[in-house]
Image (cartoon, rainbow, N blue to C red):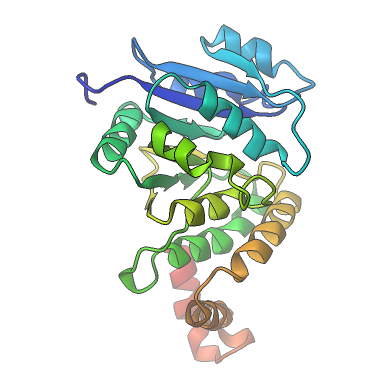
Length: 265
């Protein structure tokens, strides 16, 4: 926690997030001077009502222009409406721990031209949700292959200077506004990205509560968009690693046990 930090603006893009938005707003632990903006992207449920009840300012995204997808448009509207230079964009299913907003603000203050992103700890409840583990691991590995930082951002938590964000065009950048995986595109627009993986005590989210069906929908889109932006060597090594995880099914019966242990770890 940093009681002396400058105020920050938290932006939560939300569409039909009645089950999440109030808990998300509460988890931001906003203090006096901060603002929390929930951008309601044409919700048909009680998202806006619950967000106001939790203390957030609700901004209606309105009709998006041609060429824009929903989430980039909602993020852009929130970024433009923010009053403070430190902007933290948080998906509605994310839960931050006390002090997390302070830490993100400190990172922005230290590197005002950089996009900071966080992959929250993935909390799972149903067996089918575990299917996303392999894809999350691959995304994390691709963000820093061989220790080299890549311009790969994780969309659930993004933090940046509002001035830098708007100077680049934000989510309105031509390569971002219509991107299916807008976090990858935004990272490339910034060029300088620092991606972090959160401990379960710092930030968590439940990514695919509907199980395997949600995993398939989400990651067929993400992998297709990310494949062309990944180092070819990293892609080859990722395929080899996935095959090795199959142990005796694909490689050798002697590899089944170490593969099982690695997945468990």
